[in-house]
Length: 177
Image (cartoon, rainbow, N blue to C red; front, side, top):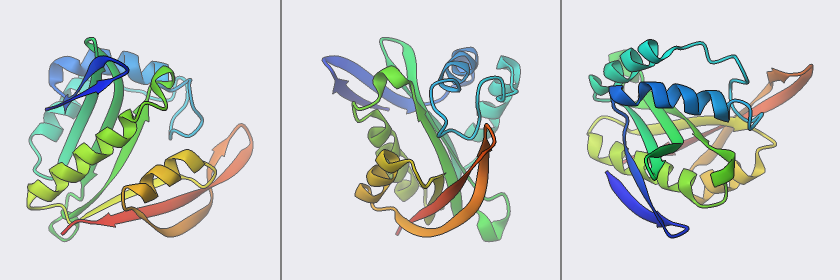
């Protein structure tokens, strides 16, 4: 767990718990409609609270996966999920997804979640590389990822289709040693 003061309030960053499932589903359903930079939109996240609870329980059983939430006043305002590979040859590398409620953009919450992931990865004894994908026009996120040490590794053309418009995806990675 990590505590930080954001805008005069205590932000708590901690691992997700199965009891967070319902609040996480509500959070995800809200954030889905706030940005086209996510891999899902309104109504596309098809898990219910019971399925989310099982998802979190399964992550807690793994040494190379983590689910993290950021809370302000007991309200989930951000989430990060990271999963390493399920096979021995790929267990050391994984990818994360992150989201922050729009009203909390610009406060550094996403940066703190990623720092939490990096610290956890370094202490895991397993994770040696963190990957991410983002749209090539997600300039603020790309700037943050570079600031934290992620490097561009490639681009996937026409990887995302939203409302009839194709977007390219930038692949980035960070070595953990």
